[in-house]
Image 1 (cartoon, one colour):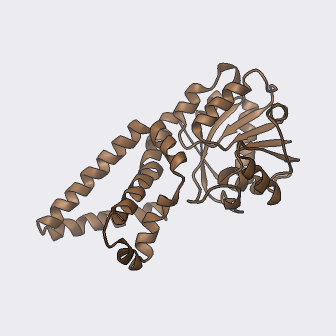
Image 2 (cartoon, helix red, strand yellow):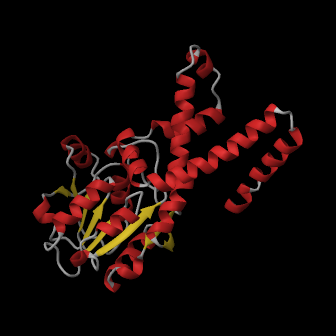
Amino acid sequence: MNVGIVGLGLMGGSLAIAMRKLSFINNIYGLDHNKEHQAQAMKLQLVDALIDFEKLTQLDIIILAIPVNGVIKTLEMLEGKVQEHTTIIDLGSTKEIIVNAVPDTLRQNFVAAHPMTGTENNGPTAAIEGLYNDKVVVLCDLDDSGIYQQEIAVRLFSGIHMRLSYMHAHEHDRHAAFISHMPHVISYSLANAVLDQEDKYNILAMAAGGFRSMSRLAKSSPNMWEDIFKQNKNNLLDAIEIFEAELTTLKKEIKSDAWDDVREKMHKANSLQEIFS
């Protein structure tokens, strides 16, 4: 099968690296609106060749590794131009807005996927081997995709050693607000809280693992995350309000020297790691 990847950054580039090892993948083609990214992807040999949109429509698998608004626009452009067997997979961070925007004539071709992985870096030079290995990929509303397209998506993601999870798009977006989108909000806020201090350089001179880990996400692309915040606004606001309530309670307990309650909160938080293990 021949694959086309639209978007040659961290996600698209790393996926290209991973798919090289799949026996059913022949050629990997790339398309990106950023000419520098196209040149870098070729230099790094992430793709076999660059293609135009017309060539893209003739491929067996089309991967949309671009922001959600770009996914929606590209799906509109693909309507009526792909073959019946073509499988279109998007990797967007929010799913409901995409699923609702898929043209009816493309719904059988389309698979909504969100690989739960990434780094704070971007662009083709950020692409790394193993980014997808042993990570979860959420496949949303898969029953609405064609049987053949379902099989291709499962074969592809299983082949690059991902763990498959299935849920509805609305359910995905609410969950993602808590475990992905809100952590970015907190990281950006934490970074700005320090940057707004007069002695920020002295403060940062003391920064150790804890602060660096919590502020790492603040390096993420503002353009990309602004779009994600917009697209999942309501779920994100709900998650922030729940977090604010938890933070306010802990603040009150610290202020009133209710250390037993503070300790109980911390013990409860410790149990989160038991779920991960």
